[in-house]
Image 1 (cartoon, rainbow, N blue to C red):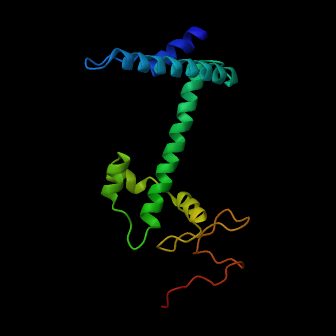
Image 2 (tube, rainbow, N blue to C red):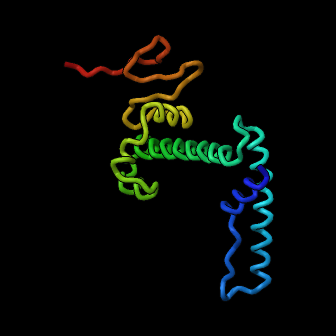
Length: 161
């Protein structure tokens, strides 16, 4: 197990390559820093492996990275929902968001859903620009303006025929 964690640390934090214009002391400092980072990672991997059901440092690290990836994807969805649905006077352009996120326009257009919009509305405490979602208040888990509930201050406006 220890051998696997040490080799995995070397894979993730390789020895720094000496630059031809670099002073020997600078390279030594970078090598020492990398070694310290690897030693710290070995400790983290050993702890993660001990806490994982498989007790395998490779699988434990992949699980941690997958969780980080899911969190980053969630943040991208929330930021995109905010930028497209809540920013006034007009939303961010799809092209700009796609370029910033490293995605295609078609992907960025469909990356978030109503649940993401509700989460944003709740966190910033206001409706979206199109008035399709409201912030969650109290024990409610979702409030869409199209549904009038007795707790609403004013019923939704319905168009006249």
